[in-house]
Length: 189
Image (cartoon, rainbow, N blue to C red; front, side, top):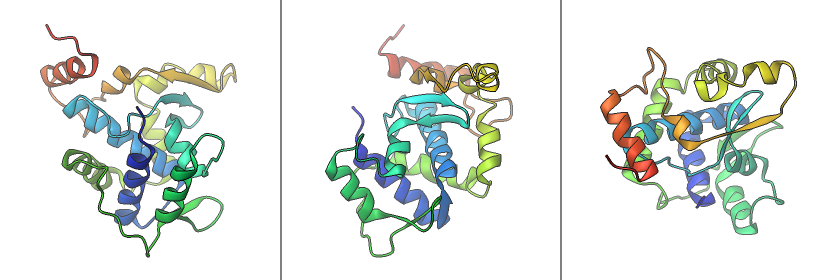
């Protein structure tokens, strides 16, 4: 089950660290945090549904939170997001200075993943992050379809997020990734 409050706290946590970011950068940082956590611990932070879209992999609830989408989110989710996140202009967000958060929805390993991703990717521009995430097979497999405008989005199975790149800071030994896959799927040898 997707817990919107977890997503909101994760976005706020990142914004407290990097100060200001646009929607694309936040979507990509959450995606990379979910990959990190899944590869290491067998679950994502957000439990979000991911789609390959023109600008890379996108968590649908993360996108809805950052759009303050009242059609897709419950009123309490929008209220919580409005309490923690502030839109400074049409594209950029900051953590509200007045907000006080105990981060009850984030585990220690969730925070570890968020910290790691902020450290490794937090200084990259939105477009460099976009290009970086286009290298992962869960997006790259659809590149031609996006270029030819044959699709607007394609569903990414959570297990596909276990992929890594050759020199990827998210990389773990294959045996460890297999254990994480077993945790995710509930299939143990």
